[in-house]
Amino acid sequence: MRKRRMEEAVAKSLMLGSLGLVLGSLLAIVGVVAWKGVSALSLSMLIETPSGGYYLGKGGGVANAIVGSLYLSLGASLLSILLSLPVAFALQREYASPRLANFTRLMLDVLWGIPSVVYGAVGFIIMAYLGITASLLGGIIALTLLMLPIMSRSMEEVIRIVPLELKETSYALGATRIETALRVVFRQALPGIVTAILLAFGRGIGDAASILFTAGYTDRIPRSLLDPVASLPLAVFFQMGTPIPEVQRRAYASALILLLMVLAVILVSRLLGSRFSRNLVR
Image (tube, rainbow, N blue to C red; front, side):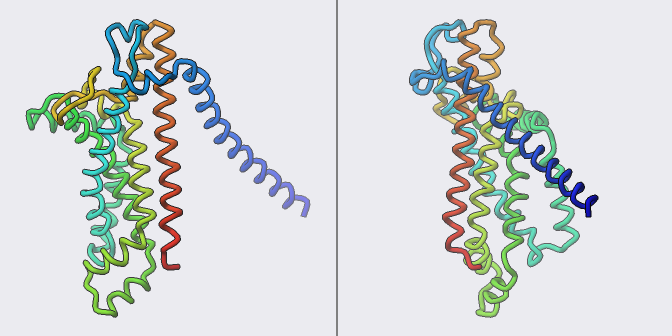
């Protein structure tokens, strides 16, 4: 009995220690970024583009990077949805053989773990083949390659856990596979699908390596898909690389903006998932 209590105490201590380490790391990251960035954060940073001498400590903001990050992530998310949703449904047992489905899941897991810089290199090769220079379109292609396995795998998991009884009831009522997929399975899996989309969006908006060579960088807001585009991760990188303290503080402010955007996406995904879950069949 005494040994069992000691084992439980040790296990409980390890769990609480791990929880404290994770929460402490998160609070430390947010705290350091906020502490160093809030002093440089201002309205001009949010609504103005970099002016002449911005990287020497003069006026301006990172509106170009904020808008560019939204353009890149929204474009890649839309393209990824169009590709991921059919893939997620195709991997269900009603449509694919178990061997093919398992092999595809394995490949998606491998793609999920590939470093994002590799996607940037592949995107650059695709751009060179198509004759596209560094642009918004090139960045969207690279981010789509990055987000596709994340979104596909997440959607596939939430669709797979839809109760089999709902599908069988739909078939018994004379519905076809397509009707069942769209009217029953999709509606039941909608909260998880929305969460998968927003989590992939959050992953894409914070990535820098995949767009370093494909999206380029500019102090202007792009007006077409073929214009170069700035992004917040690269804005942080370029500002942090300067020796001027004022510009470095702006780098932390840019990082704080990016962090708040990602946290907002996570919060929205939770709220939408909770709201949609109320209408699910239990």
